[in-house]
Image (cartoon, rainbow, N blue to C red; front, side, top):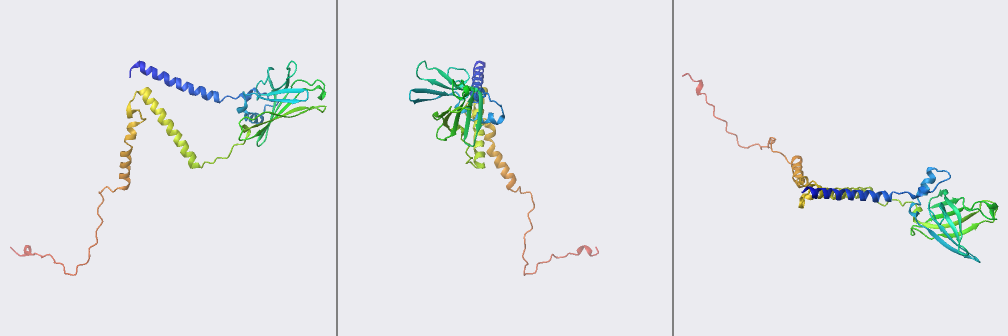
Length: 276
C-alpha cells in the first residue's frame, strides 16, 4: 500500500472513532442537573434523573373559564417562557399577554414513588391579593403510562382560597417514570447475546483493521485468517491424541484352550553324554 493511501485510511479510521465518541457523549448528557434542589440529596437527584427523557421539550395547555383565558407552559429543568429560570409559566391570552411565573426550576423539589414523580417548582411571582401575597408554587404530577412516551399537560386545579401554601396542580403521563420490567431472558440467552455482540465487534474491527491498516485483500481481510484455517487440523490432532491408541502397548495374552491330544514332547538327545 502506498503511503498516501495509508495516511488517508488512518484519517478515516480516526474520524470514525471521534464520531462514535461524540454520539456517545451526546447521549450521556444530563440536562436535569440544571434543576437546583433545595436539599441536593442523592435520593432526590436520582428521582429527578428519571425525567431526563422529558427535558428540552415544552408542554403547553390552554384553558378558558368565563372571561379568563390562559396558556400554561412547562419544561423539565428548562426555560418554559421568556423569563430565565422559569420552569412553569402562565400566559394571559387577553390584553398584553403578560407572563406570570408559577415556579422556578432553580427552586425544585422532586418526590418519587413506585410509578410516579412529583415535581415542585417554587419561588414564582407573588400573588397580588390572595394567599397572603406569598410566592406562587406549581406542582406537576407525572404518572406512569407505558403507552405514552410524552403525554399532554393537564391543569387539575389552582388552590388559592387559603391563607398560605397555595399551589397550582398539573398532571402529565409518561413512560419515563415507569418501573423497569423484570427481564424475561434466561441466563443462557444473555450469555448468547453477549457472545454474539463480542463476535460481531471482533469481526467488524478486525476486518476494518486488516482492510484499512494492513491493506489485505480477499480472504486475508478476515481477522486471524491463518489461525482459523488451522483450527480444523488442530481439533483433529487433539481428538487423535485423546481418543485413539498409539499402538505401542503390548498385546494382552490370549486364551488358549486345553488340547485333548497329548502334546509331542521334544526328543531329548544325550549324545553329548557318551564318551568319545
